[in-house]
Image 1 (cartoon, chains in turn blue, purple):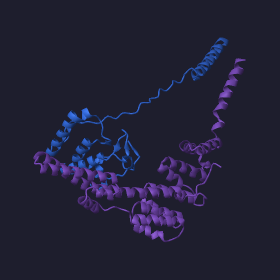
Image 2 (image 1 turned 120 degrees about the horizontal axis):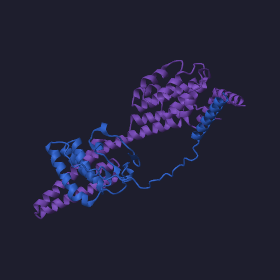
Image 3 (image 1 turned 180 degrees about the vertical axis):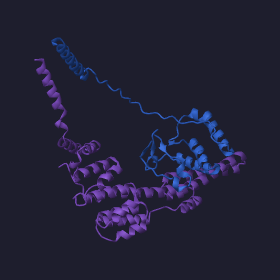
Image 4 (image 1 turned 90 degrees about the vertical axis):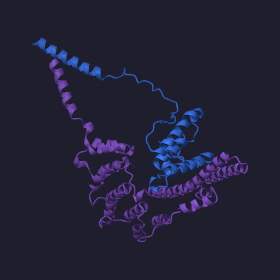
Length: 154
Length: 276
C-alpha cells in the first residue's frame, strides 16, 4: 500500500511539474520586425483586350493599343492624372459614345495642358497622381460624387 | 505526511475556484477604468458580463454610449431604449437615439421620438431641423424654424437660407460663355487656369489652321481645323461639366458645414463626464 501511495504521489508531482513547465514562455523570444521603407508602386494598368465588339469602340481601342505600344511605352508613364489620358478616352467611350467620349478627351487634354494649381482642384489617387475619373464628366449629375482636393483616394 | 500534503493541495485548489478577482464589484471597476481609457468595446463587454441586478441606468447608458461610439448602432439603440422613464439619464439617452437616427438617416424613427409628447424637447427639434436640411426637405424644416429663437436656431436659419438659395453656377450660362469666348465658361466656374489654357489652345490651333489655309497647305489646314474644332467643342462641353462639378462642390460644402455645426454642438447633448 505504501508503494502505491508513493507512486500516486510521484505521478501527481510529475503532473504538477509538467503543467508548470509548459506554462513557462520566457525562452520564446520576440523577433525583430523588418520594416519596409519602400514606397508602394502602382504601374499603369494596360489591358490590350477588346471588351466590346461595336465599331467605334474597336476603332478607338485599336488606336489606343497602337499608341500604347509604339509611343507610350517609349515615352513613359508621364500623365499626372489617374486614369491616364489614353485610358480616360477609352473609359469615356465605354461610358458614353464615340462623339461624347472625344469631347471629354479634348476637355481632359486641356486640363492636362494646364500645369498650374492642380492640387487645389483634384484629390490624389494612391499612385500619387491626381484623381480625375470620366464619370464626373458624363453630364449625368447622379454620377458626380465630389471628393475635395488634397484627399487621398484608395 | 503525504496525506497532509495532499489535503493542503486539495483545499488550495477548491478555494481557488471561487475567485474574488472576477466579482461583480471588480468587473464594474475594471469596466469603469476601460471606459475612461476610451477602450469602449472592452468596457461594453465587461459591463454586459455583470449580473442583471447590477445593471443600473448609468451602466446601461454607458454601454449604449460605448456601442454608439464604436459604431454598433443596433446595440446602442437597444440599451438606450431600455433606460427607465424616471431616470435622470433619459433625456440624454433620447438625444443619443436621435443622433443615431440622424446619422443613419432614419426619418421615421426620428419623427417618432420628436413628436412623442412625453419625450419631446427643443434639442430634439433642432436635430430634426438639421435632418430636414441634410435631406433637402426645406418645407418641413421651415415648420420648425420659427418655433423658438436662440443662437442655434439663428445658425440653423442661416444654413436654411444657404440650402434654399445655393450659390450654384448655371450650366447653360457656362456653355454659352465658352461658345462666345473659349475658356470663359471655365473662368465663370472658377477654374481660371483651365479657362486660360482652353483659350490659348483653341486660339493656337485656329491660327495654325488659318495660316495653313492661307498658304494652301490643305492637309495641315484641315488637320489643325479638326483639332481647333475639337478643342473648341471640348471646351464648351467641359464648361458645362465644370458647372455641374461646381454645384456638387457647393452641396458638399454645405453638408460639411452642417455636420461641423452639429459636431461642435455635440448634437445638443449635454455630455456627462463619468470619469471625474
